[in-house]
Length: 581
Image (cartoon, rainbow, N blue to C red; front, side, top):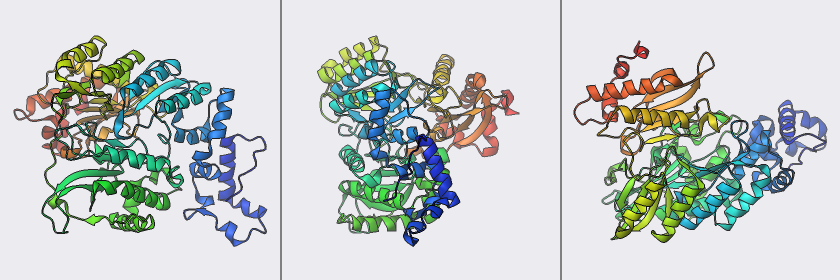
């Protein structure tokens, strides 16, 4: 084990900087004349210390799991973490987002995007007592709370723990919130309920030291084939349920999980088929093995090239699967991944674009789930308490969050539907939405994120309202607004994607892309125009939608129309607007 640098009055950020500089200059060797070749060869999974980026140096000096004593000290002093300290703290779920938003933002860990009604009540109290009096549903089917003072960090952790919830491993270089189909377990269309395996893998990661503090953030999704998309092909790993009947590998007919790798839509790449499958039960150890391969081989010198996509680009899918098979043997998993062409896959049930809004039948007789439409994912404590009470008193104490930034209440009996819908709508939570509002998602943006270049939630709300007043659609259009190229709202898989940018004059603007999709609509959007001043976005998108409606074949969706256009013809969408020139 290495010896940490003595503090001598330096801050944690200064220490990490000095450690990085000393390592790169090789000065540490001058102070270790008797250490021998072993010290000179010290490395992190084969990367010499002097080549590590500063974040890796910080994790080398202090593993994120060992941060608790500092958290105690910061809490006692009401001191907010800064620099590389706050980078390490993100592994515990707390983000210093000042000056954009006061204090900390905390992001929860809700594997499979599910929680209970009583847990929703507890979260409402935390939002009211310690946060800013509101919460946001995220694009990973998760919750964020904001404006938390440093002195309340341990209170938030304790109250989450008391409710059976956690925020650990929800930020920085972690395997982030693991998503599953939000209707898992009660969807009439699903092939299999994969949520138990989602939860098991999430818990395995949290209890494995080597899988904390990864080379970079990591997203994993389990797609059971349900009605509502989890945009699983935008994840680093996607386990996609498929039905296998006749095949050339001697597999018993049944439900298997096809393994997809390398999705990172912000870098214009979606997950691709590895050509291998496993059983649903095997996904937990398969996911663990792949994470171990990532830990041991990913780039620790360049943060921009540290995601799984770049390891796959460098080494290839075949190499990665071979290393995974070896790791499964080390873990004594007792199985190997099975090669199987996707030609053997049965047809996936259709994804229904608006199945996350409104009243829908469940697989059990006389039971329904109700999808609540939220404006850009925002909830007040009062609204959260109502959802929690309805889940407890009228449902099956089962609440789900979706990647479309809204909430489902499950297990509502037929005779209670009207009462539940009325209670929700009386509290500004409608169970219906226009074809624009239902598919509109936005990251936090400049209002609450240091990286944000545009006020995405505000601009998105205004845009949706403007389009609702102008058009009535017969086919939905998904609009994704993200504040920076990191693409938390995944602009490249929206029908229309808007990514924040800075204009030449320093103002706020957006680049516009069109024609992206996931699942059956798999594909990366193409650039259309930009930068567009934020004040002009409503007019530009109105022009795009208007030209689509006037030029399409009868009944054609926006995606079908846009994908029928060559790159050279895309400007037709801007016809009549000055940007067309």
